[in-house]
Length: 334
Image 1 (cartoon, helix red, strand yellow):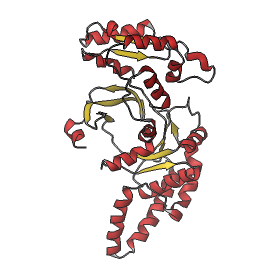
Image 2 (cartoon, rainbow, N blue to C red):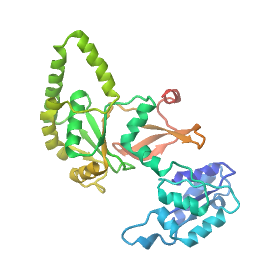
Image 3 (cartoon, rainbow, N blue to C red):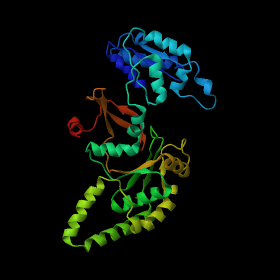
Image 4 (cartoon, rainbow, N blue to C red):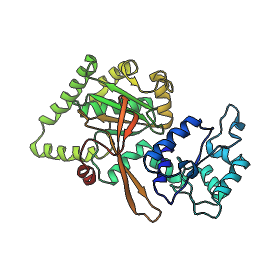
């Protein structure tokens, strides 16, 4: 959210940033100098920080920022004074019923989805469904996994169907900023490679003995399956499932060991809220994002692009704005 302060590039806008704690003067001075370098005049006068005075009321069970704001009459009074007789709107990071209450308390329109749409839109499992509806190209992908047996069965099925994929990425549905990521590199685990090859050869052997017309039907069916959630191949993947149960907890790499110190704790949370499994392409050129704004009238505007800078695999440390690799035409076509 802090990046939204650069909306001050529009001389007609001011920004009020509600923060859970006081920002150090050095931090404010840092952003002020960046804004001055970008040609923004008088940034301290146009950028205000409001901190709810009762953020600590929840004790050990911390309040969310919106809950803390609703419990802080002084902060609400200051906000009302800052927006008095001026057009303004609220831009939350996540929309829940608490943010709706903040919106009604301050009498401000809220720029964002309603809570009933927020959860599906932000879920990684629903991300595949959105991509399919938008007719975007997608790779092997299993979604809506809520059970340990289903996790290993789905992974085994994907690996048998796609033996050339070397690395598989696991994501907890509702985590963000790389917290819920975990990946599994199969290339250096001989037991896994042997089990994958055995399962793949069994599947191919069954197909090779079929009638040519049946093979054409199988190809068409496989194309249809690619647009659906990948499923396990049943008996062909039984041996692989057993191997994965032994190897994944020992060999999988967790991207955030502070949140999840071991694979067991990761899998417990993943099966509680849901997770997805994705194939990782080889020779990735860049991880590029296109930023869109969907206005209340339904119109879509492209705001810009960014390219992730990673300090470890799959974890964004910073971003280039705009992206530096790959042409805009390719992104525009997608």
